[in-house]
Image 1 (cartoon, helix red, strand yellow):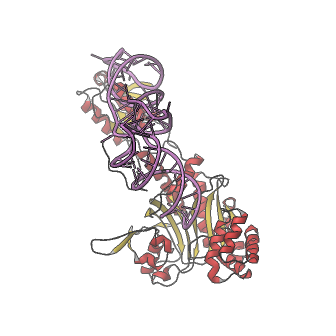
Image 2 (spheres, rainbow, N blue to C red):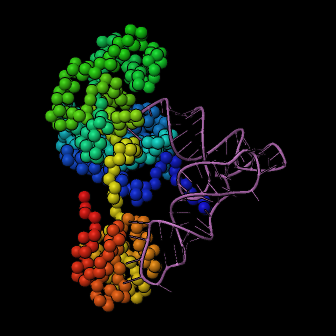
Image 3 (cartoon, rainbow, N blue to C red):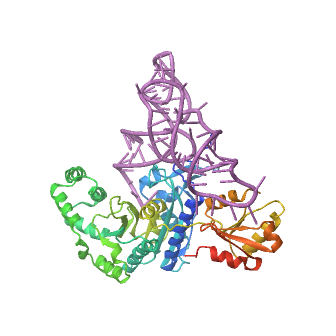
Length: 425
RNA sequence: GUGCCUGUAGCUCAAUGGUGGAGCGCCUCACUGUGGAUGAGGAGGCCGUGGGUUCGACCCCCAUCAGGCACCCCA
């Protein structure tokens, strides 16, 4: 093979087959988002780096963002996340917009990471936010959106679970353990490590992080307490609402869910695949001063983000992606010889006028070859118009799957094709 | 950014340091108005790339690029 200029590391090519799956996933996202009354929006893919300097995790901007200078010497970045853009868009029109606003978006993002399975440098992300209310009902609604998405794509509560916790509750608990405020970020990391280390290693790690033995004991107990949520009025109300919304099977309290990002202030949640893999699918939570960081009035909100890469792997492994997705043609018009080509093209136009996807075979080839081509593309119906048909004013319609064919009057062509087409789902 | 594993035909993978193979796929023919089977042929490779060791390298060493796994981090 001649050398082909390779694709950029960490990017993906979407061949029609993959594109069909992506289209299907995105359609599900759209369906669920709009069902809950959210409106689609989109921001630019390029932003000034200053937008992210305001907040975001330090590492996200400094080490994971694609930053470059434009010909005009501006420092630009390919957006690594949407939240700062959302904050700006809201701040710019804060006196025009009707709050609470429900917005959703899906688009490309870039992070300079080491690519591996489930992680690329260019990916798509679904963002959905409910901004302008502190109500617990908003938290519950957002989580219900996530749960409904799982239902919609065919993932059961046995396959995925949304784990919920509350930052305020944890802060309160940490205070009882007399863990100082400036130690909290380190403690979050300790919490995060619990399932990744052995108990002994975890202890060591916790003490190295600055916790006393008594605090480690307390923390260990705390993180085993699945009933801790009862001590939080917010969470009690939250879980009651989740039940009302009918998605309680998907939602569970988990004291270990903390989330890395600093801007979360209340409810936090993460959805995981259940089972051996246990991949993280989406994450989000409540933030109370989204807009203030970019110069607007502080606005509370709640939302989450889901990347397309992991969810696709989960959906594939779960076997819930339907077959027969895609926009391949429904009918192939074979070409018998040069003389009959115009007749074939004319017929194709008629079938298109009836609303079907039709291709005309572009060369004069043996019929067998034309059928084989149709097979490969998964086209279900073929039409043959040779000299015999033309002189009789008829058309042959062939069901490629069952290998049946029938020669009919031209007038009943469309009807006959419909009989052979697989019924739409 | 760190550690480990892997790069051989379009795909999946073999090949003690001594002339690179298989299965599937592809093309042609048996089958000049009918495709999933069968049979017979055929095409297709600077063995990821660049150095080094050696009489000789797909094989050993180094570097580099790419992919995977575990960290890190997170979606």
